[in-house]
Length: 162
Image 1 (cartoon, rainbow, N blue to C red):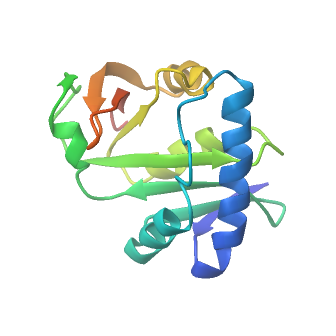
Image 2 (cartoon, one colour; image 1 turned 180 degrees about the horizontal axis):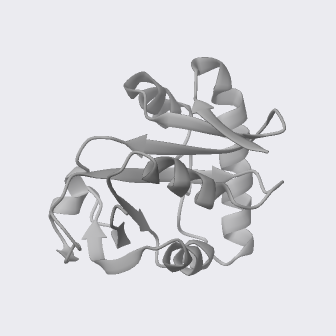
């Protein structure tokens, strides 16, 4: 059974393990340019935890996934070549990662976010084929391209509250 809880500083080693496995899965699927170098790492995890945005997905008591659920506007979503489905308040999912021991981590994160009753936005790298395949199956619509602070493009998706 999957359960979701807030991350704590004590979870950082597990989060780093999950990020490492997620990076390896990205490389294995041909995504060689997303999450390169130290990102995401301990600094991103600490910042997400401090803001109350970081979560752990546990399966039978084992940390199998992690995600960030932002409850503040994502600055990079205000520009780019993107037409959002609505201007309603939204939550943003970032840094969704699985250790590969179980499926459904993204679906669990989306379900958790949807329980809050707001629209959900998420972005991903064009080379992240698994994410691009899964998002429409979870009710997301591709809305265009946004650009990160460093100018890197990301595909932007939006799911309306139900």
